[in-house]
Image (cartoon, rainbow, N blue to C red; front, side, top):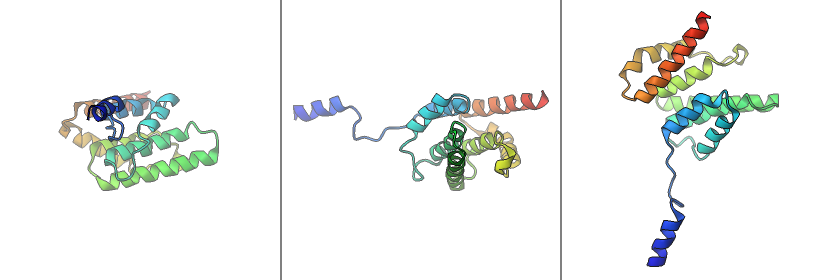
Length: 159
């Protein structure tokens, strides 16, 4: 019995599902488009996330897949990553269309994509949704993240 207890203590969380800290995911996501290592770290963090996971995590995984395309040198690989990430985000958002965080993720992706990719359909609707619903969120970290993004974006448009 002592041996079994000792093995459990030594092995730590082995065999138990690892929980993903949403704050870590958010932080890495905010930097992934500018820092390749953050995109890679986010990929590692979300490696076991699949379509059965919490929709917001699957949405982040899809968005990061799209961001990772920018770091690929091969144009075919870029398009494959973009398409795969887009489909993942669509799948996640279809599971919860009123989720503020997922609508923000989609908005932040679409507002940074080149026009030739043709993925801008929800841009205006998502921005309107964000501005109308941000104050209703009890998640202060999420509200700050969205407000910061919208503030930076409005400053860029005025310059």
